[in-house]
Every structure is written in structure tokens, then in C-alpha cells.
Image (cartoon, rainbow, N blue to C red):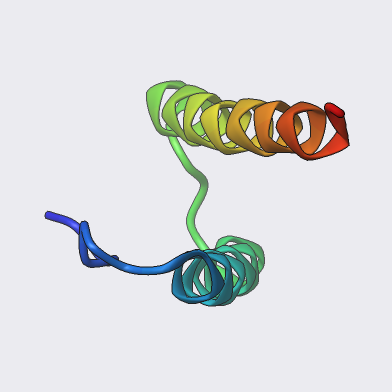
Length: 64
């Protein structure tokens, strides 16, 4: 399931990513029950992928 259309422009991708990340952070902080170790690991892995993609784009933007 994709939350962002495959043909979306950069501004749309940025806006939707920021919105989803903020909402996820809010919901993670709000939840009463604990997460399993697997759920926490999978969330960390997903955030790591986003972080890596952002770092790659930063390097690409800084390239001459």
C-alpha cells in the first residue's frame, strides 16, 4: 500500500512524508500498551531507511 502516488512531485512527497512522520510520532507517544521488540525493531528500520534516503538527497543537493 502506498500513501504517496508514484508520480508525485518532490513538494508533495516532502509534505506527505513530514505529515506522516509527525502523525506516527504522535501516535507512538500516545499508545498505552507496549510495543513488542519486533515492532520496535521494524519501526527503527523504517526510520533508518527514511534517514538514509534524506542523507542521500542532501549529498546529491550539495554536489556541484
